Image 1 (cartoon, rainbow, N blue to C red):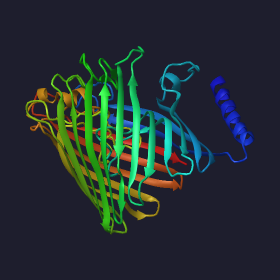
Image 2 (cartoon, one colour):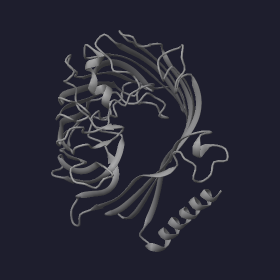
Image 3 (cartoon, rainbow, N blue to C red):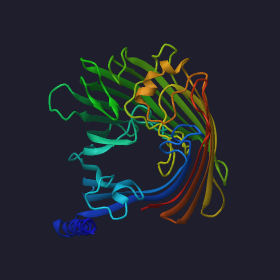
Image 4 (spheres, helix red, strand yellow):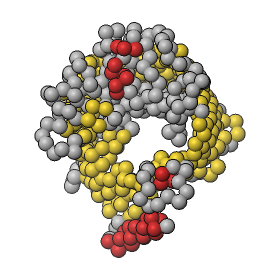
Length: 435
């Protein structure tokens, strides 16, 4: 009760300050609140005969993200983005009778930044905790870095009517001991080009990982020397062939010894493409494919920081509720097809997605980069392993801002080694309030 009173008092204080600080100040609120239940089978170990974490379980959880923008005028704005959850019902902070100091994922700050235009220019500067996502085509999430927040300064400015420039510096990690040489700094430069019916965003990123830097669940650099890592890529989309839209991405990356616990460093590439047909009144059709390198001797995998790669299926980083195995990591190829926004009844739509994937190395022992840096629960795939997935998702738009969603997913790994490979299944249901 005390926590609720504190939050209400804080909200009242914010609104009061907004009303009195300046007649020009405007507070804008946006958010995405979700509550879901999910039944999962074999998500923990792909084995029908045993039960481990996330295997054959039913859970409920919620997450509330609220975005507050404090707009002084068109030139100055600040954002405070809070998040509560994900919280599992009955656990920790969401347990019956939990106190205000109970352990668990509680209310925290997701983003907090100042954004302003330099006087007499169109240059936009953003400083503080913000979204750190490398450019992409928009059909696929970025495999090198995406889907997370970090402290950064970003400067964007138009050069011509068709060409822009974005420069970013971010300190992704700084170890608790404040000594020089144990930080992870990343720089990014992008040149987005917008032409009639076509957009392309070439970009380059360079990272410096000091010795013994650790975070993101792994050791970023285990070497006694600084590890350098870089990427060059481009995101592309074209709609001049309307109703056909084409999306594509290409990234090449290289890392020194020690990065992500690698003894000999690595370099590799990935490419993806999607062709979308929007000429039907009742559905959007898609065909897609992707390839990420991985050599037989264990190198050849593209380095990455925090993959956010997905093609929109609800089993691999594509769930509306976050009920999935996480993003894909380098070392695979895949092909797939989807029919999205299938609708014959007002407010009711469906997505159908199928895809097939295999690995690009000859031995799981050589897939070290994926194993060490992968966010996915699916083990590294070799060229003799495969994964088949099918999804059927339904969305009913109850109101303009409120949707009920059902996700049904089936995945079948086929491992050519001593590894359980029973089918994994998911049924998830919930509500999303977006405002």
